[in-house]
Image (cartoon, rainbow, N blue to C red):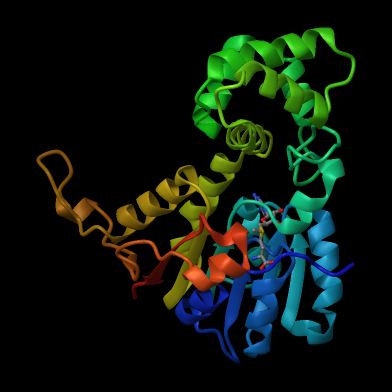
Length: 306
Ligand SMILES: C[S@@+](CC[C@H](N)C(=O)[O-])C[C@H]1O[C@@H](n2cnc3c(N)ncnc32)[C@H](O)[C@@H]1O
């Protein structure tokens, strides 16, 4: 099957990574393979990871003509150091992550990623691991659901929606996306924008079920130690929870030792990264016109110092 995913800010990603023959680039979020295809066309070797086995299978088929230059793994990106170790690769020239989900996943109604498609309330990128969203819901208290909605979805009426979802999970045999959609819409009443809040509720469960923020933090922590001097890192995020984590890793890794009465300068590590984007870049208006899903993207890039 062809991918429907249009790579976001690809021109900018290529500008910062500047891949070419003899280089090794890690694409931590292979998805439809849009970025990886462009890296391969430049002549670079590409290691592509994705948690979703279907994405890996599709991209592997599409990129098979590149032979040994392309290696794909169905793996969480927090495990990328292990994947590199298994391949006998220590340092690489580029690492990129394009967070969130692909259009292929969003359009596949059966997996529950979209609130307006009918399907299972599952939301896992890899259905072989962890618990589907419906199970999280069935085993949670109202307080836990409320906390997830506020923390991971910044949902405005979290208390009201949590009570309604808790009630749904207790009394209903089937909890699928139509049931969740109807319950949330009813809890919101008439005065709100149900689609915006519905998207936030689904985002909250997606982040929870896939431990997205834990995954992101672990992967970010490993980036500086696997980049060769002069190697580049690029992250494209789609909401403030993601962008905040990318920004804070880059700040931490680019800060000169401060020293204090308690921690002498000599004990602190010298900076390992140089920030290339003092402010995050946004997609051009033309790209947003062409691809609505690009509208919330923010790109940050940095270079590994020697
Ligand atoms: C926005 S898409 C990437 C699209 C890709 N850049 C392209 O051009 O086709 C994000 C991908 O990240 C994957 N993903 C999400 N969390 C992941 C994780 N923890 N580890 C690996 N892949 C993950 C999703 O399954 C999805 O395929």
